[in-house]
Image 1: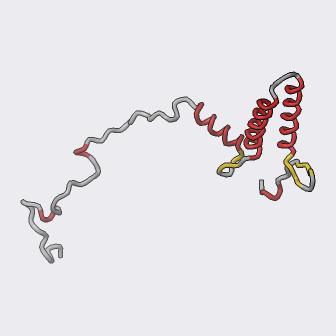
Image 2 (image 1 turned 30 degrees about the horizontal axis):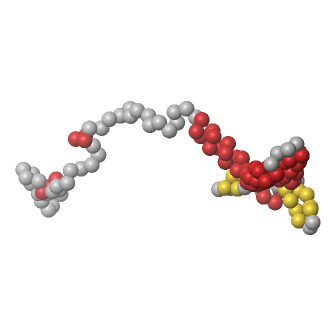
Image 3 (image 1 turned 120 degrees about the horizontal axis):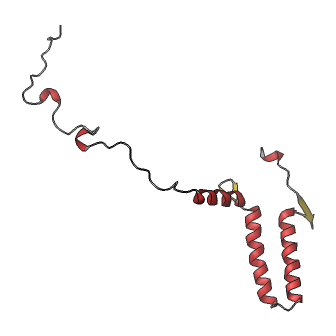
Length: 125
C-alpha cells in the first residue's frame, strides 16, 4: 500500500500528534503502575519497570528496521528459526572426481605438445 494512503489512528495532545497505540500502551502501564504502588509496591522499582516496559513497547509498536515494523521483523525471525532443517546442508547428489573436473591443467597448448605436429599454414585449403 502506498505510504500516502496509509491511515493510522492518532491523538492530538498539546499540539502534538501521538500514535494511538503508543498512547494507550503508556496509559495502561501508568494505570497498572499506579495500582501496584497503591497496593504497596516500591515506587522507584515500579517506575523503573514501567519505564523499561514502555520503552520496549513503543519500540515494538513504532520502530522500523529495514522497512519492516518491529513486530513483522520479529515474526520473520521466529518463522526463520522454527523451520526444521532449513539451515542444514543437504547431501550432494553428484560427485565429480578431481581428474574429471572442469578445470584444464596448466601447461602448453595442445598444438605445442610433444608428439603432435604444429598446424601448417594453408594446409586446410
